[in-house]
Length: 168
Image (cartoon, rainbow, N blue to C red):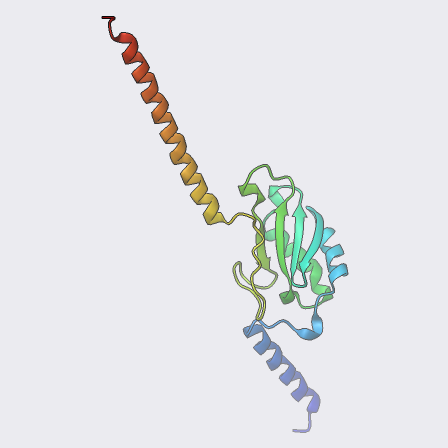
């Protein structure tokens, strides 16, 4: 009683804990876009960064070795002085990708495990082709190649059989 500063600190701590439990970003500590973009672009391995919308930051990285959660962590740590990083979901794409799987975008909220998002934010799908579609396409392509190989073998066997039939 009488120690209003201690009561205020305790209430602030309880409010903060409740916001974190709800995954609610601090509205007073929203990340400013341009300084955040510049800091993200300055992280080792990141060639450029751009905001897709107010909560999703897309960073292009220089090689597959940088398209990992460690790079997302380095970007998030760089953004921490600007505000509450629970506002930010980082998406990484390899700008040197050569194939479909290399083009997949790795995404994660700065403070949450992969696949989870902050309260009120939807998970933005950044991949052009979903992994399930790519897997189904790979399976279908393999079946088609097998069928073509069997047909070619059958055609060779039929041609050989026709050559071996004596003339009448």
